[in-house]
Length: 386
Image (cartoon, rainbow, N blue to C red; front, side):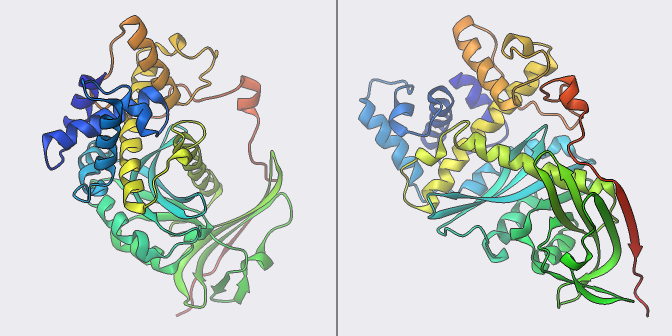
């Protein structure tokens, strides 16, 4: 497994300042996958060598606190390799935040991939607020943008905490599109109807309204397009307001719904996977390096899961008739099986931009049930009068 991880990571051009630091990083990914937690003493149990466990633990700790290791810079080759598969295609990037212990905020940009999200960039802030300013993550967005082929079309998906006109301007500068959920208290301006709060335009339960050529907030930023829905979901009626730089329709709600895949990704980092919340790190820089280890492990496990499904071997690790596990969990189970039964392990990146051949589902009945239900649709177009 260690040799395959070394080839998987370094085969992309990934390099640190010296070979020893690179080897320590790969051992950390190795220990994380086998121990299923972020505890350094657990990683040390799986690191080879005659040194004491305490010495190995200190080595991992020194790596996490090494100021020479800049996570986004060293992660770049992996991101470039991942995004090559989407050259000339549309890719959806989800932007979201997650809190740790009420003291740190993780701002993560992830590639939506088959029900999960693969991290391509992140920033850790020493703040307990879910609302963050663009200045904190603008550089990260610009770094990721340089890894994306100019032939690809990028759509950013973000929640209400990122409703910022400055972010929308940045998206247009980068050549990206966006679908951002906005607060109902925000004003929009219409060329022939004046300004109104979005909540005053919300349709009755079961309805959807689409507005073309509107201007947002008192800054009158636009023209933009607004999709409103008061839709019935499995949890009752919910109000959605989504602003877009492209014409809106029912597909807008489907596109925005992809954003929830990043929340599943955060669960993989936390309680459903790597147990990030049990980390005892006390500073944002060390946490960012820890996320580098988690991101590399995620790429390896999801790649393994993709390969297992593509080769028709999912039934060897997933007991469900239909796919019932995430690609990360399928990959994780395959690694465990391989170490016991001597199966082959993946040594290179294996992702696909094609539609999921085996979408996760509980049953055909559940699969055919609509997640969102609308009964009335209205369209409005406000062309600015010159």
